[in-house]
Image 1 (cartoon, rainbow, N blue to C red):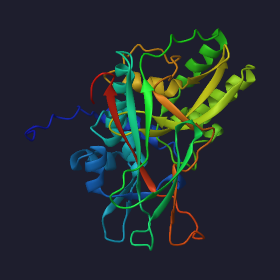
Image 2: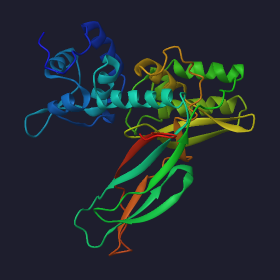
Image 3: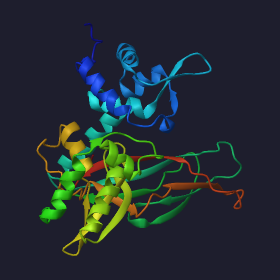
Image 4: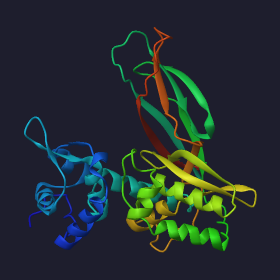
Length: 323
């Protein structure tokens, strides 16, 4: 096998691995797929090259022919394939960055500078862009931004988290039960379906947090939902998780994410308990999903607000030094 200069060979992928993976993918009903991903995107975003893509199609990967005659694939199917086969994909890179934050904050104090970088959804509109941002801690901040203006920034202190509380036995057992679910990226239209999760054993982090909270409620614990960000350099990631009140404090529990980190991030020991809280890795914005930003124009205050695409540019600075 010839490997391009500077590029490491991908992991060996057996037919058995492909078969087992596609058997899980096939459990996701087809109506939840969007066939928008072309072959070049399979390679550039998910690390699925043409030879592997052909093997996947022969083994039963679902696809559709586009108007241009090109085959199209579901981006979440490809994302799941990339994650489980260990390919160099955008999502695998993100998970590794989460693990680096996890390891770094245990080494000493520092801070993350988080900038919301919006993309105007209506370029060329009259007036300047008027944004309203939903920031960590529940703060709503309004800003008028021109093309050269700095986006709003938030500084988040980080460092070694306090000692993890010892979970009561029933709550720890619940975390282990949730961690037995198999992690797959799921469309918004099915990710919260508890019946689907219980029937198939498949869930993503958001959906599994729902099962965790339902179980903790039944056990008599005080719980709350949380939406916010996993804080990581260079980009933070929107995330849902559950919190349980223990000894008067809200404790962020997410056994699925802990399993993912221990499995797919080299910075996190593979024996890290799934009961370990996400303290320090996440920052809470609200109890439910909220748009990170809305967009209007200074030229028309009555114009309905749009939801722009937002990147969460993140820089880490050690105390006493620079990033």
